[in-house]
Amino acid sequence: MPFLFVRALTILAIESPDMLVSTGSEIAVPFFYLGRLLGVRTVYIESAARVLTPSATGKIVYPVAHHFLVQWPSLLTRFGAKSVYLGGLV
Image 1 (cartoon, rainbow, N blue to C red):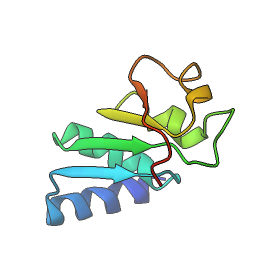
Image 2: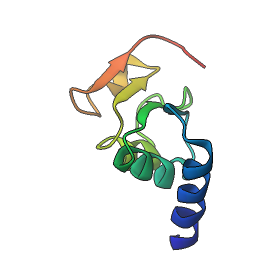
Image 3: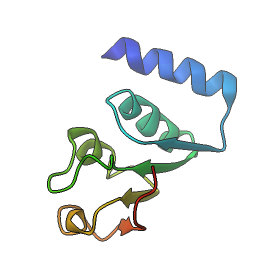
């Protein structure tokens, strides 16, 4: 896992993004945490496949995501007040 953080930091330093958007997968974790430290806006979109239970990645990045979008209203109660339902997005 430390290798992923080093690699993510290298990519973020080279690319210098204004925003990070992710629809999941554990690769989002180091990017979101490092991105937040570097002042990059972060948007997480919970997978449409997650209807009743949140993903592990969603739970991990929720604290650092600037915007947290869910694709099912049933997930609003599974996450905190920051989560927003906008319907099917992806």
